Length: 560
Image (cartoon, rainbow, N blue to C red; front, side, top):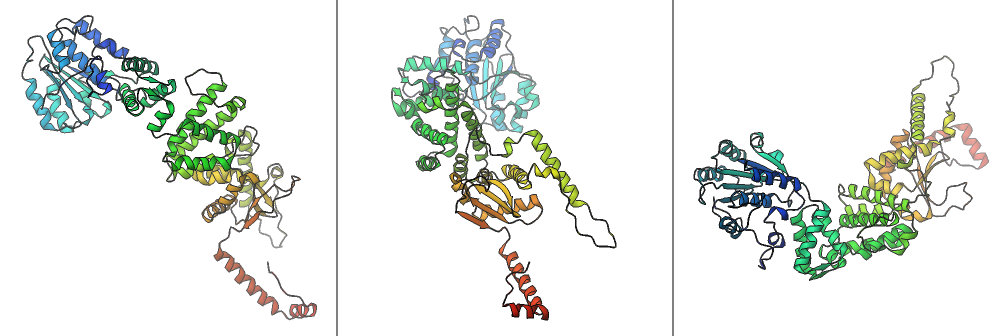
């Protein structure tokens, strides 16, 4: 096993080949941010000189596990530690900083995970520290969860009974993958994600030293993107400096990250709030054609809507300037939009065509004054009554008439409660609920429609501003799927009419744009035509009816 340097770089070091996260890696405990509990435990251990032989540092990446291990290794070998801090002046602290301390070993278990690597550790453990008496040999094993079972078992004996001068520090992001026998022999310290305040303070101090200026919104984006990891945040900052120079603007940062500009996001949301689909969809396609990812775009829209909500609630924050129209908009609208965009983004991740899914998601109308019934807005008591009615209908359909010697006319059992809740509307609500779960894309097309039962036909009415949905639902694939679901709900074949215009009885002239499609397949139509022809032939063979047709000059048009 090769000895790996522990070299850390002082904050004043101007070496150009050092990344920011290496250049500003803490070398004393006071520079470690956001891990107060861990630092306190380790400092008390050093002050009391009760050093254990094995530690387990676990937590998310970039939270200071390896950094803390190096500071701990340096401090236990320091000649004059002060309140648990290394003195930074003795020969051992200086050699540690220079990367020449001979008794510090760092092993990456991701690439050195075999049994032979840990046999080499066993050989190294036999020899006392080269730095002298009362010193420690420290072994830091990164990504310890990557060890093979054989390597873990080979390491276990050494871990169980090491010499008094040996200290093992295992660092991992997945402690649950380690053997229970290893976990039970280590003092476990959990590193948490850094708070936004801790990252912001550290970031601002580094920006000041580097002489870089950036917009406050960029700072928030860096912190947000870093997700509580200091290393990731500093890597993004370094990337932004290389791309933008000493002054980092928000649009430049978004361009670097391959994200949509704030102006375009605001424009999309303005079209969304105005319900201008003729402007919204071309704008969406323009953004996506420029190479932007649709899921990133929706995430940006969600974050921006959150800014709008905070603005309307008068909650302070370092968010970019809010468009003027937002001040006169309704808070409830943006809350509903926020929830809807989250739903679209969540379902988009499971879609084979996320761009189409996103486009359909933006075609939904969000309005706090919308009185159209949809599955998510059914009151609970109404839903219970509808289910009760459905059970009654099901029960009635199963009742067989009593067998009697005389044939009586069929009596249709009528449920008076159906007068209050028309069957077509009730079943349409239940159909929508089923489609929303199983077929979200189809649900986006049929949600604006209203159902009515007209002369025994199942009619779907679309208003003029939903002409896109009206056209798309008539595609063969969508229409076939809808027909099957309608049949399943009603338990019988139904003819479906899809109509663009207002519902009859609303004192508004219905649009002439009307399309009627029968759900039945061409094969079943052919069967009906054949049956009709056979009936015609039988009727014409009847002498009395044949003479009557001849005398009147009539003809048989249709046989039901």
